[in-house]
Amino acid sequence: MIAIDHSPLLKAISANAERFPNKRAVCVANGDEVSYTQLMNYIERTAAYLQSLGLRQGDRIAISAQKDLEFIYVYFAAHALGVVNIVVDAESNRQKLDYILDLMQPRLAFGFDCTQCRTISYKDIDFNCPTVTEKPRLTENDVADLIFTTGTTGKPKGVQLSHFNIFSSADNINQFIKNTEEEVEVLGLPLCHSFGLGRLRCTLIKGATMVLVGNFANLKIFFNAIEQYHATGFGMVPAVWAYIRKFSGTRISKYAPQIKFIEIGSAAMPLTSKEELCELFPNTRICMHYGLTEASRSAFMEFHSCHNRLATIGKPVCDKVDIKIFDDNGNELSDGESGELCVKGNMVMLGYYQKEDDQNAWYGDYFRTGDSGYKDAEGWLYLVSRIKEIINVGGKKVSPVEVEDVICAMDGVEDCICIGVPDPDGVLGEVVKCYVQKGGCKLTLEEIRHGLEGKLESYKIPAVWDWIDVIPKTSSGKKQRLQLKQ
Image 1 (cartoon, rainbow, N blue to C red):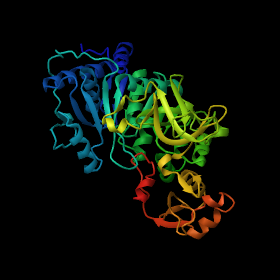
Image 2: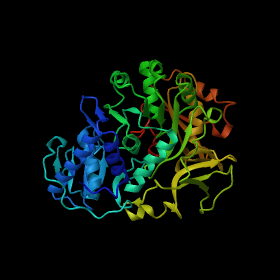
Image 3: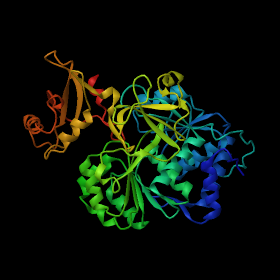
Image 4: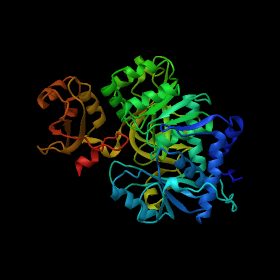
């Protein structure tokens, strides 16, 4: 039997193997599936295999986060041995991938071609190795995963998450969403980011069932999985919802009676989309989170109960998490004052892998998110923008998100992105520049500008306009405004 006392996640999965031995734990769209008993058995066998390869406590492996059962086995087997997972997206650009691998120097790589070390295919795992012989000496505060932030600019940062962090995050989420062992979730999100990987952990610690589908590109597969497995929930990013609406209309609403929960996150969502979801899923618990890889799912709001304040990002996910607003000197601000959102909690990372990245990342025990926002008198949090993206127009601060939301609410505008640029007249320092996505736009730039009169203060109305073919975004849908300023 492998040692799992240091891993609350593995302890929960092991307990579920005893409670629900024959219950379906994970299914893959290709038909592969395992029960909870089989899942624990394969994790133990994979741990023995990893040990036979010479891996020991403290070693690092790079694992491609694929929608395969073997990925899940390796991921948890590494936890059991105290081997640190470097979770990567093998489809990310080669420059980023090489940067991560050169920095981390993993002992082995699983599931993708790697020039820095030996590569092993998931299909080549030997499940017939003897049992684990060398048990690690670990605590729940040891590093379990290293996930690199996608970031909106600059080099990715390695986020160190402990066994305690990743379990706590899942436990916090389940408490808010009210997930139970009865859930059947269809996951189309990638497992290489904290959102999708977190959903997998949430499901397994509850003893529920996870159904893995490749992605949302083929909506027929997604809808078929909802029907075939009688799914009760799913997660998505706002860009996925826009895709679903564009290519299937409101067809998804036929499943509303069986869908108990939807989790949304990773990027901002227009108010019109939130209102539409409330109409299409009147009895579904629609939960949207705010968080970062460094502080996963820090705050939550639920659409129906927050229907009169849909602009909020919510409140701290549970009583083990605290969010404060600080000024530039680390002093807490009063209600209504805008400053930096800073988070303290059981899911907040241990720190960055490179210590220089930690130097300005904290105010005491509170992680600095880099997001500007404020808290109202009732404790509801509101996001303004990324601090580095705030536009300073003659001393007046403008959130690009606010301007974009008003423009995108116009009929005939598909999407846009706003940044600050030097004032051509040399008076205001900065002015707002708006790039409008050309494809799908039915208005002229002048018609858009004219339509903003009376909807925004004059200094917030873009002074410079241009067309853009593709708006730069991260894989999770966050707009990369700083790229346009380079």
